[in-house]
Image 1 (cartoon, rainbow, N blue to C red):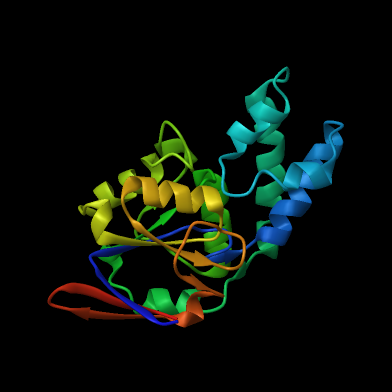
Image 2: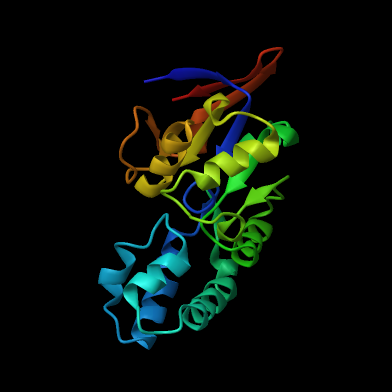
Length: 210
């Protein structure tokens, strides 16, 4: 079903929306889990869409979270060369005014930059796990991103691939579109960004989804 939205800005999650890195994420988390004696399959079911430090603190409450996180981040940065652009992502961003979009990721600046640089995306601005007191599903990431662009979240459209990300966007007051099959709590879902078109007019951005 096609839907049309007139908004002022578009806020993009990174992994699973712009960067096709899900397989790499799972592989690195499984390697990390094995190093700490955890069940890799069980670990990867609960980590997507949330800041890694929060997941690590929950999984290993008696271990130095920062040290364990650094091990994971090193694995993921080393694997960034395996990242591919999600279908439609680069073409869509080429048609977006650079002052009207931003990347909102649960990753760190180092990791997000490594993946985006590898696939040839240079975001005009980025909100990472280091920029907010609480990560997704808290509303802080998307509230902060909208503020950086100078807009109210209610005037923004969000593309997300996880339920925590959708919850973050909606609790911030933005409209969320699910990318892929995994995010719940949305009215509209697309397979990838090939199903999105943006036209700029005097009212802002007219975004056709579907």
